[in-house]
Image (cartoon, rainbow, N blue to C red; front, side):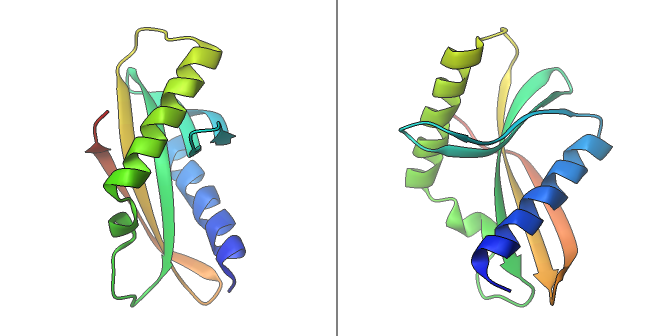
Length: 119
């Protein structure tokens, strides 16, 4: 499976995870000059900015390892852009990483890491 297809499959699986947990999805692939946010959701009294990382089962590194400090800074900057554009409702903000694993053409596992990093 190519990277783009795997990425789309991962984002769909992550969105399903948030919806099932009662979150409302507000945006996907929100882009600013500073970076991109894969998913923006609201629920549990907070606004969630989620980075989705999709990898094949059996890989050496975990998907979360790809969310480096530099990547975190870009996500935080993009989140600030989102808040500037759509307003800051005063809700707490949370940054999650969602790890999606697949084998063949099917998702095998989805793991949400709440508060994976802070602004």
